[in-house]
Length: 313
Image 1 (tube, rainbow, N blue to C red):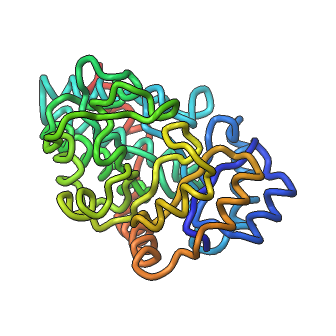
Image 2 (cartoon, rainbow, N blue to C red):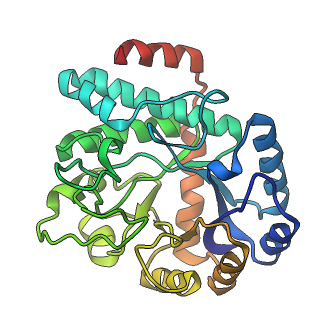
């Protein structure tokens, strides 16, 4: 498998995409709203992908709750934004932590039932007044300790459903005054201990969505030993060809390059440029899947949803 996770163009797997995925098998596929219409269509697409992808490849979806959700009503359950859970935690810490776990378990159950292995959540960024609202209510709170505890609870809920969590967006996106989808955020502050704390406190989780600083901050100060995945290389935060960006990110120490655009030509170039997933990166990748499989519990979705609704009422 190539050390990359890539997106698709639409709700069906095109013949050219089948050829590409067989020629350069990626470590996984990430799906977005453009790929998901309803349960029957998604089930067919997931089946086609499983037949084409290499054994062990993962299927990933961005499913935080709130405004970042690809599985949506009326076909799938709605989930609250992180800030709503954080507000409950501020009034009643035990209830907030329980609501975070329940939300993780419910998101995980929805994702697992749909065939996904990985959900891109929780967000461990801090909420900063005056920052760009690209994070906003996606953050649990402003206090690092609260974010760390709530993020861990949500991640443990995901794992209880047998789904791998993805901590976002290390080493911290909350104080940025720019949207990294559109431009490169620049943070002038030198003291980022508060931003790093939630990630460091969850360094044993099986996956993270990384920023640019790897060896010194992520592997060093944070002590993170899990899978490091780049943020989407199709965003406009970085300039250059996606294939070149992927090579640079992997050379810098990321385990996987993420390219979500879905356009065939740049996706093909990126997959051709990426090396095979091997060595320590392959071991971390396999371990993440094993952890999720080992933590999986039998969950009653209706019962969990009723409990969460009562807590958040």
